[in-house]
Structures are given as structure tokens and as C-alpha cells.
Length: 146
Image (cartoon, helix red, strand yellow):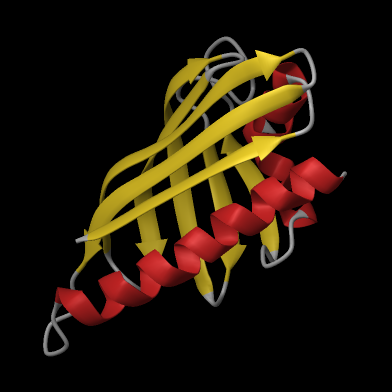
């Protein structure tokens, strides 16, 4: 099982940080993301509950469905499609907390499993844990420096 947890303080107001993380179609602006799009709009907000986004990065494609959307403090998602590796995704969650009017604490979690017959789950889970933490950290750093 992979378990990724990245925590950062960002020198931006919470509303701005949430807006950048929730803008699914624009994840391609972040380093390491080759393409991104909004496949299906959410119920009350295009990026909200029920929205499905596609992220293409590192030779893989993920479809993430938004399962919790509480601006500006919570964004949760579940990977519902992946290729070429099969994900069994349990949790994707981004929590935000305003520390003051210009500083936001972010906690980004992702948990699940990748199981490929013959290789077993451990090889890919370890790689995903390492690369996922780096990718999440890079996205948050990009938001902080923007």
C-alpha cells in the first residue's frame, strides 16, 4: 500500500490556494503534469462535488472524481480510472487551514495500492509513494512561488 503525506505552509491567502488546487483543467500549468482537463463538471460548481478531471503525467493517465468539496478548506478525490497501472485508490484529500490572512497550511494525503501480477504491490507502491510526494510538493511549491 502506498501512503503519501505532504505538508506545506504557503504564503498566500487560503482562498487563492484553494482556487488553484481546485482548478482541475489548469493542472497542466504545474511542472511534471503533461496535460489536464475537466471531463465532467461538478454539481454546484464546475470543479465541485462529482466533477471528474483527467491528469496526464509521467506516462500515466488518471481520472479523479471529486468526492468532497468544501471551499476553502477541503478537497477530496478518488482515482476512478488509471492507465497503464491499476490503482485501488482509498483516499485523496487536500486540507487547508488559514494560519493568518496571508498564510495557508496545506496537508495533502493519498493512499491506495497498485498491484501488478508477477511484480507484486510493493515495487510500484514504493515508487509511487516517492514520486507522488515529490509531485505534490512541487505543485504546492509552485503555488507558493506564483
